[in-house]
Length: 77
Image 1 (spheres, rainbow, N blue to C red):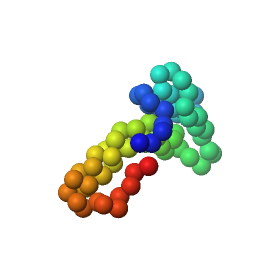
Image 2 (cartoon, helix red, strand yellow):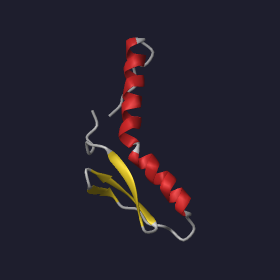
Image 3 (spheres, rainbow, N blue to C red):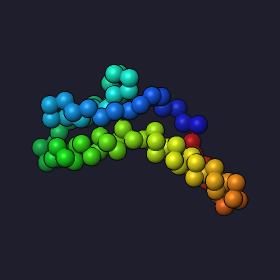
Image 4 (cartoon, rainbow, N blue to C red):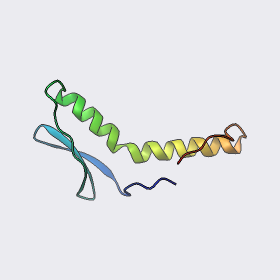
């Protein structure tokens, strides 16, 4: 099992940035590069905020493949 911050990850807009919070604790701070649009920053922040759910989905796929004897060499750290 991976060691990452437990809890609901949320992306919150603050000025021209999107930051990731877990239980009102700042987890990840972003900034806007001059050539990056606010829409891109938001999309990236949403992707980062969904990391725990993506990890869980991959874990389920790995378990399914293991049960099906299709993924003997698949390892999820």
